[in-house]
Each structure stands twice: as structure tokens, then as C-alpha cells.
Amino acid sequence: MKILTLNTHSLAEENATEKMELFAGILEKEQPEVMAFQEVNQTMAEPFINEKEVCGYQPVKGFEGKMRRDNYGASLAEALRKKGLSYYWTWIPVKVGYDKYDEGLAIFSKSPILSSCVFNLSASDDYYNWKTRKTLGIHTEKGWFFTVHMGWWKDEEEPFKAQWETFLKNTKSLMEKKETSLWVMGDFNSPASVRGEGYDLVRVSGFKDTWDLAEKKDAGFTAPPKIDGWKEAEGKSPEQGMRIDYIWHWGDINIEESRVLCNGKREPAVSDHYAVMIKTGI
Image (tube, rainbow, N blue to C red):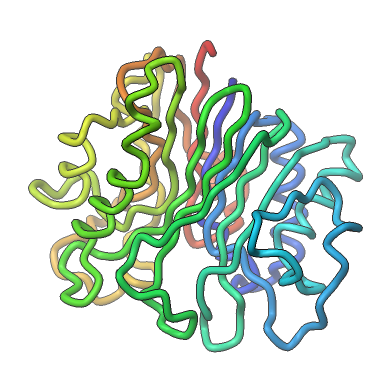
């Protein structure tokens, strides 16, 4: 099974449509089983569409009727459909992004979505507060999969530590089910090279970094040195890039390979982040 995560930056990217089509072509080649996305945007000024007509879309209960015409997830699902790829997928809006987007989270799965859930990670649930954070999870025959876009460790209002503790509290019952595979992935805004902060907190909680576990892997950098949110960072952004996007698994698992995609080398860059894809024997 292949699992992929990407902070898409979606409509905020220059030439967003062209990059989305390039990304769909890469996915056609790789065909991940599960894909977790962050910053999945739509323009707030665009009209709403009938979600029942969107390819493969399954709304989360309580979030129906919010999809707009240029929704990045819907556009990607349609581009994949034209390439013969069928995914079940869901999306939620989380907050206002860049003062003009409904910014959200999405998960795509080749296996049917048996159930889905959403809960707050941040103390704030204000849609117009850019620090509002949620997580979106789906349950398939392969396990539970969550996508997150975390806050920063030193944020005084919405610190990473409190958000991660909220995640653990809300998924405790899933962790206790040893027969259920549990994954959490996305943009953690916590460099793997920095000790005593977000990366180490996730590790000591019992989740395993699949990059660490992989039998075959590359350098793992998932973002260039300076991107939105890190342009003013002090001493946290090495010249070669950062590893801030992860695929974590609850407990040990055999990971055959961890590979960075869409970093402008083997494949074109399609976002200000790079994609991470793992291959496991499940």
C-alpha cells in the first residue's frame, strides 16, 4: 500500500490549475491507496455547487453544502477520473485563508470510506481566525487515517503541544484497538532537526516516524528553506530545506520505502511543500 501526504497550497500557487494537472499526472503514475492533503482551498466568492454531482465525494456529517465551484479537491478528483482513477474522498473547510479562501483538509482513498470524523485541535473554533486548527479522519478497511495542519511550537495563543494533546485525547480509543491501524499525516510545522519540540513530542507519545522506519529512503526534506510561515524563522530553517511533513503510524510497522515527490527534481514542484509517499506491505 502506498500512502501520500501533501500541503497543496492549492489555489494560492501561481499557475494553480497547471500544477494541479501536473500533480494528477504524477498520481496517475504512482496511484497511492490513501492521500492526505492540507490547504485544500476554494475561493469564497465562487458560487456553491451540488456536492452530489462531485466525483467520489462523501461529505462528513455536519459539513454538507459548503463546496464551491473551484474547490481544489473536486478539481483534482475530476482530473483523476479523466485518467481512469477512482477515489472516494472527503473534505472540510477549517478557516479563512489568505483573506479570500475557504481553507480545508481532504483525504482520498481507493477503498470505500466506512466512516469519517472531524474535531478541533485548537482552542479556537473561530472560522475567521487563521490559527484555528482541526483534523479530518476517515475509516476504511485499511484502518484510520487522519490529516492535520498543526500550529507552531512557540505560538503563545495556539501552541503545538496543546493541539497534539487534544489529538491524543480524541483518538485514545482507536489507539487501544490493537487490530486497527492508525495513521496521522500532514504538515506538522515542526522540523525533525529541532530537539525538544513538536517532532520529539509526537515520537514520545508512541507514534513512529515512517521515514525512520523505512528500509529505503531519501533525505526526506519536504519544504525549501523559506516558505510561508517560516520566512522569519530564526535558526530553524537550514539551507538544504526542512523536514516538516510526516506520515506517522501508531506503533511499529514495516515500511519498505519513504520517498519525497514533487520537489522539482524527478517530478515538478506543484506546491511550496513537497509530497511524502511511503510504501508498506499492508
